[in-house]
Image 1 (spheres, rainbow, N blue to C red):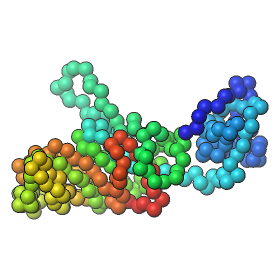
Image 2: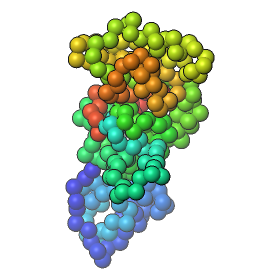
Image 3: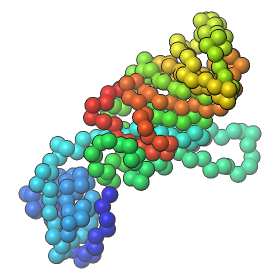
Image 4: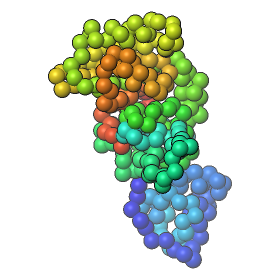
Length: 266
């Protein structure tokens, strides 16, 4: 995001100036401005209503409206934050006290929270934080990968293919876990009376203080990890989604986000 530049209250709208300079429509001028292609006195201005008078207005010679593609953000949601699909907690009919403050993942979609590990060269613009849709739920107590997108094709993919898209989660449990300790889970998954989705569970790491289980399942199934751990007599202390389809979370820290890479596909 650019530093502030002085506005001329009595001047003309920046969109009008750019339209005159480029010989284009006012709406196209607004798109150039919102695309970060316009500078006022050398500073990028992204607000079409911004007023100018004597300031120098320049347009990037490489500016193209074809470059204004919709973006997708991959966020690492902290535990106990709403996922952005569910925007408000479901109230309990028995709770009579003051409603507790609950944070939503959308609050984290700010320029300051871009991950320093984001290897892409995309410049952050105001328009990147408008029109973002989320459709892949993640239970509130879990952390990990959440997707926000402006791209209708990505949104359709995530919505229509959700039932067959694999989610990879890491469940942290207390104590040391051997492969034999997972046998009750395997039996429960095979038992049709439990009506559980096909799921792969394996020990990722194990130690006296705690262990990590890898869970791979197609579709979002809130509560499944906790249920499977309970079946095996394991105490679940943390749950994190690290992959959705073919897209991994990467090195994004909790509370930070990155742009979906041009080469990445769900």
